[in-house]
Length: 61
Image 1: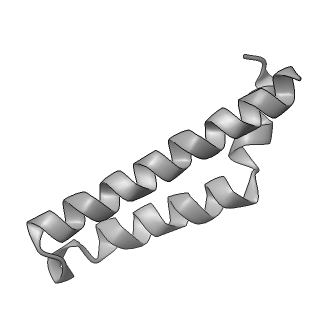
Image 2: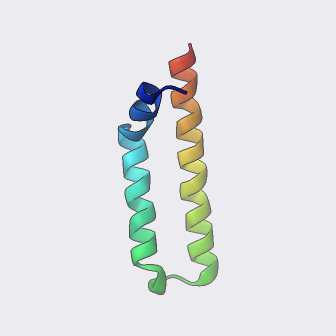
């Protein structure tokens, strides 16, 4: 993966929004039960992974 590819991923609006959601989740950890926090963290992680996979596919083809 090139530096340009990484910049494309890091500047993607969906990736940025998901990272902001992760930051909000961390900042508000005390307002979630352990299970809710874990579920939300897993959802965000999956969405980031899925979006990165889409971006990589677009860059390759």
